Length: 308
Image (cartoon, rainbow, N blue to C red; front, side, top):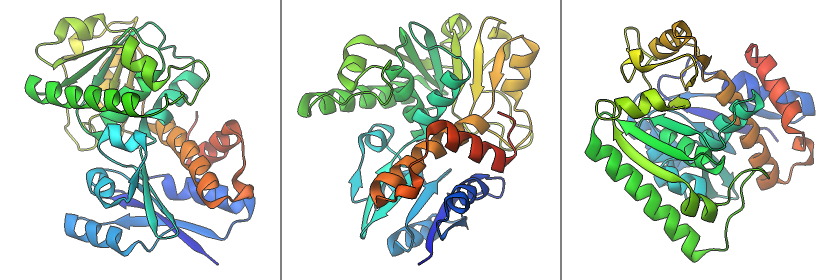
């Protein structure tokens, strides 16, 4: 029986998710189909989620909060991000996950980026930013700074994250990291220094950062600028932008000009898809999906046409 999977969001015509997942399903002989669910209105998205007529969906801007709210069970990754980018339908029960951060960090580490002991800046205060912030924290940095347009917003978002992380640590057996060299939830809570600020008030910290990760949607629309003053960039820094397939963003362009090592969001897309396939394997108990991270990454990157 054919099982349907989708990418939900708006706009999503640029998404490579369908070709990536369909390449995996075809290669292992599964009669599953992954398609677009481009819905411009919140009410349409909520109605689609309520119907639950899918095996699994990936969720992108702007419906991650709605997907989180529609779930019956939220994994810790979704709880801490306050948004879901994956929903899996397990016999009528919707389980929410957020694989953005894990995929982002896995891809960057695959490319040789080392977070251990580094000063890291995460731009943005939405679910994608929080997912990345948590995954970065598990990778063992000395400091993580969350920056947004306004200090109060950044403060509130970070305070909520830290409080909820502490609550998870306090009421459960410590959750281990996905990677052996990463920190557990309890170690993140005890060891990593979290800070917050705005793009204007954090100029010195941005200039001093080793790694800058932009998780805002800036760059998806023509004429979008960078989130902060790119004159702060220097050649010793690594800069990552979640946006892909919209041309080079203003941030990546400025970072290249400054001599930074740069990455766009294509590798993160593939990285989080690898995590999602493993979730599908575990939930459906489908042995055909028991593929290695490297095999999945290479297969999906090739299907998407990414040179990674």
